[in-house]
Image (cartoon, rainbow, N blue to C red; front, top):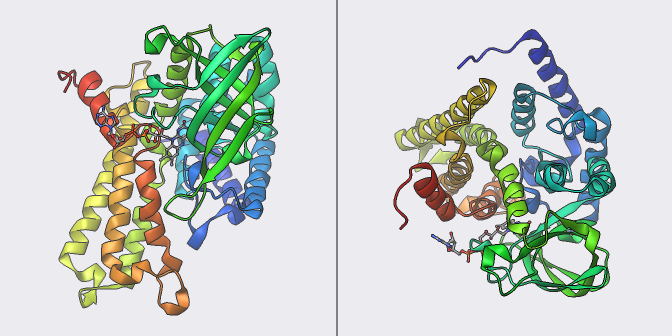
Length: 404
Ligand SMILES: Cc1cc2nc3c(=O)[nH]c(=O)nc-3n(C[C@H](O)[C@H](O)[C@H](O)COP(=O)(O)OP(=O)(O)OC[C@H]3O[C@@H](n4cnc5c(N)ncnc54)[C@H](O)[C@@H]3O)c2cc1C
């Protein structure tokens, strides 16, 4: 691995850093904590003021040309190479900012899926408005009885004339209450084997028959929703790929989602904040930073985060040499979200009962930021494939172990 950057990459980083520091200030959340990486679900979108700040930030990101560095220039992206993309991720996560402004799902995975598998008309209609933020998107995959076993979805779509008519329910749909469009997985052939009767539709969220109900998470915020479909008519031209071949399209979307895996979580930033916290509080009657148990924990977290970063560089090096990334690219999401949870839980241990307080006047530490993080961190180990499912994938597909 070569850890050095060229002068032009260094000046790209410096320029980007200055831009982000100047333009991102007001979108920081509770206790000065950024939303971080892909954690759109942590944004309480019932709050009009916060949402407006996000949209404003998104528009600035678009105008600066940073909103989709990884997209080809042909579709309005930055056409950046892999190293510049990696620098962008480093800098955004250093500040705990969302990677793609207010339109995480569109820019990260839905847009690239449409580029790969959509019709020319779909590309013309949707890609540019995704960048500008005129079309905010959400992803309707999970249902009450189909999450890990996604191919078990039951939401039905029947062809009637020039439309699909959709009936059913989705759940945990992040950002649905602010979205203009959605990618929706529906069952179009109930007789076929379950992976073969699914289609992938682009759905205008303002269509009559769609009802969105926010779900409040244990953090007290409502980032995701249940969505109901009652005779919703979707034009046939909104089908992506072939009828009943939606599973392949959804896999493409999931692959884009996993490509940068563990790099999406600002866990190094959180660890730095934890080290800072240990400098300020006592643990079992002595300054926390002098306690051997605390010191060992902090050292282990820093080492784990460094391993995660080096694994990402190893994967990047393979790609730059034209090779396929190795097993190190598969455990990023699992390792980063579990590390994030361990770090947050250790902060709670460090703070004891004080960590549970929210009001600074009662002695809360950083307005209850750490407990809030612990509650939010659980969801991140579930979203985009739970840790158990990640273990199964690594065991079966990467290590080639027999199925359990
Ligand atoms: C913050 C957040 C945001 C989300 N955003 C979206 C979104 O925008 N759009 C969307 O469609 N979905 C979204 N989801 C849903 C997410 O994809 C599902 O929660 C996830 O896939 C798990 O599905 P489930 O909740 O139905 O749990 P289940 O699949 O019912 O799993 C329950 C438990 O059983 C375990 N389990 C299940 N199967 C196996 C197995 N084969 N082996 C071992 N253990 C197993 C799971 O790990 C889990 O612990 C979001 C979830 C969260 C937490």
